[in-house]
Image (spheres, rainbow, N blue to C red):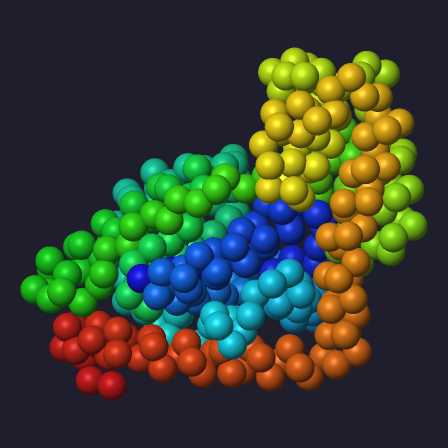
Length: 335
């Protein structure tokens, strides 16, 4: 079993990033290793450049995301961790697969329609074709499983379609058809100031989010001032349907303790937020403090991250090489 997954590098990481994606990778690492498999995790910096990025900011984001992954539990000695751009085979195989994929397939991709909006003529070719790079990302490593959320199922199906067409066109059994890896649903963390909006680094108010670099006092203050309502907590999750801010705080508590929101409410029913918020803040401090400490250590030694990514890319390149060579051979192209 080989699981392959990528994440776009972003700066100013917050609780939503941690509970929504990063922690899931750490959990996956442990479970897949227990089943005798391996995980390949990468920073999708080639995907990031489908839109303009400031070069210095992009590099900082790559290193910052790598540091965050390690700080949150990814062990580069147990999993392979690298950034795409260090392994040219990703771009090489993507071009080969671009010649197998069909315009109609890509034109039907829901995320293309959403991201390009009405300005399709002004969007980059990379934005249109990035699902083919995604296919290359997993097919290159003969991935057996790929973690997917609801919005990525269509992309995995495209990868399988491209792999099937290539194998059929050239009479080979080169590419493994990856299956979805369905894990526990990631928590959807909302703004502390508006329970109807996702927690985001782009929100102008720093009080809307818990950053992974926030100190203990900042965390406590942000939770104390988080928007709520005057009603006490009910004993049923369904009763919070029309109370988005209350629902969000309960969901955060549940995610941090690996419990269901319903079980959290059973323990705290009837309490006001004057009692619930301090308990939540204490949990957050316990969670964020060790992450913050490890991030500070990496900030003091930036060369350590470069060394980890270089080592991971060398391991990844070794695994990718036979598949890329097989693709060239199938096409009749010398290398």
